[in-house]
Length: 119
Image (cartoon, rainbow, N blue to C red; front, top):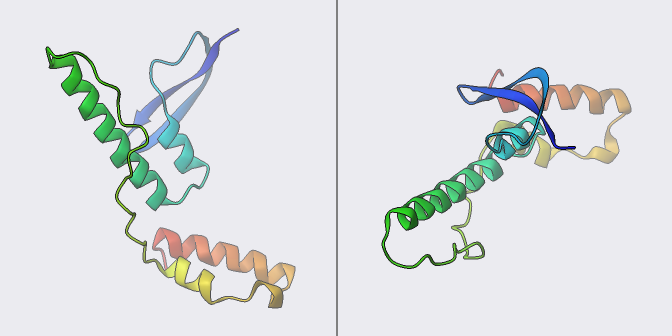
């Protein structure tokens, strides 16, 4: 049985509609789901750039009269620019072995706040 959860895009967000439908989804939401899963923004941004390039090449091939060539799935991509963030700096500066469970939990909430830019 092939089913999917109905979803819509709202800006950069993915909203699940709590409705299961038969058949495949009409598009892939891999990057949006990766963001929901907490994959670092630098990784999803690089994946988005790569996807855009693949789609551009695909579209060029569709309009071309020359025979179709394979998409370069394994060509090297540009190195990601290291992300500078207050959360990442705080994470690098800490000693996890020195934290109590409560301090670790408090730190996770602080890192989330720093990552959102609320601090």
